[in-house]
Amino acid sequence: MQRELYTEEHEDFRESVRAFLAKEVIPHHARWEQQGIVDRDAWLAAGRAGLLGLAVDEQYGGGGSPDFRFAAVLAEEFTRAGASGLAVGLHNDIIGPYLTGLATEEQKRRWLPGFCSGELISAIAMTEPDTGSDLQAIRTTAVDAGDHYVLNGSKTFISNGILADLVVVVAKTTEEGGAHGLSLLVVERGMPGFERGRNLDKIGQKAQDTAELFFQDVRVPKANLLGEENQGFLYLMRNLAQERLAIAVAAIAGAEFVLEETTAYVKQRTAFGRPLAKLQHVRFEIAELATECAVTRAFVDRCVLEHNRYSLTPVDASMAKWWATELQKRTADRCLQLHGGSGYMSDSAVARAFTDGRVQTIYGGTTEIMKEIVGRSLLG
Ligand SMILES: Cc1cc2nc3c(=O)[nH]c(=O)nc-3n(C[C@H](O)[C@H](O)[C@H](O)COP(=O)(O)OP(=O)(O)OC[C@H]3O[C@@H](n4cnc5c(N)ncnc54)[C@H](O)[C@@H]3O)c2cc1C
Image 1 (cartoon, rainbow, N blue to C red):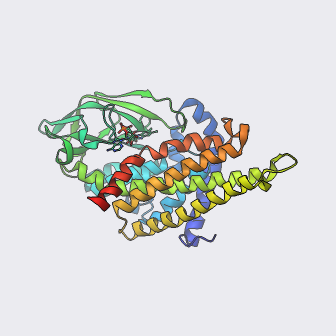
Image 2: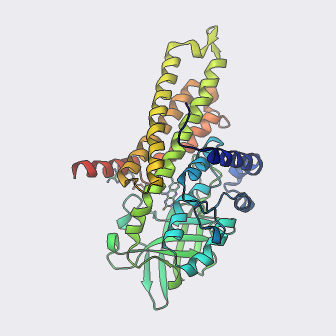
Image 3: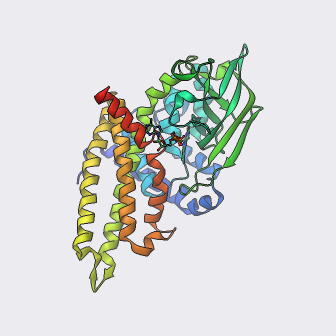
């Protein structure tokens, strides 16, 4: 079906993303998966290709376009390529808005050029060993000590955790913490007392460095506070809609990709003397999934346009996130079944879609938390 969302300019950009993936990512991905982390050089290559900081002002080296459709194209192509290691979407769409929206002019000049060139890789650290969904229960503390904060605590499951040079850390700046007592501090590589823990062993996204972070009496200058003190929870809530939309965009692209692969597979695989595609059960499976993908695509595309008009509501973003990621999970599972034993082999595209995509219903707010948000809006 013709998609109305994109113009020629977006399709040209898609070609450049594909060329980047073919040259700089796909040939290296298997090795990155083995080593559990991408090469730093890949980030610099992404910067040179103009893929970092799409929405950042050109004066800081960014793409200068707030049009989220470019971000959507990037997410679609990275997902289709199975390029789960190089977390460009996280960097651009999830951490980027904290820097462009909250940083002072001095902070922007300090961080944004490196953010756009790939010299400064970013991460955001909300989740802790004892709390994930419940952000108000964050225990990491940042105590005011005049011109700096003293940061203590630990974080876990942090994407880009090993490679990150800038980590937006969510910490308590009041005794109570919670909705009115959290702040966002940028912790930089090399600050004394900032240590990385394990690069965590996951069931998918093997080339992504997801790590533990530890902070022991880290002196974080006040000049590294993002936005206002104690407003951190508000900033998180404000930016989470874009994070959820970005995940939904990748999710529907992932579902479509695995369905395409499977449609091709069932046409050429034979059983009992004829192609699988001639069996009614298989035809119904493909028909159902194609319908679900088409319906989901329409909603997610609409959300992208709403977001471009600054009118995407947190509720719609939550609906898109839980629905599209659950569809991605279901589609990968059903398509794996249609591949039989070959679908269970680690190097098959469908197996990778199954394991890499599984986390999508968990991070960025779980399906259950998304339903809570939707339910609250309807029922109070
Ligand atoms: C690969 C990966 C990358 C990640 N990257 C990052 C990152 O870069 N930065 C970061 O800060 N975090 C990151 N996370 C953490 C992720 O955001 C959390 O895992 C997620 O928010 C869930 O938190 P939790 O793991 O503590 O689960 P919990 O909050 O303990 O939830 C466990 C279960 O209980 C359910 N549950 C909890 N509360 C409710 C409720 N009120 N109603 C109904 N059900 C509920 C959940 O839905 C879930 O099913 C990442 C996680 C993974 C796996």
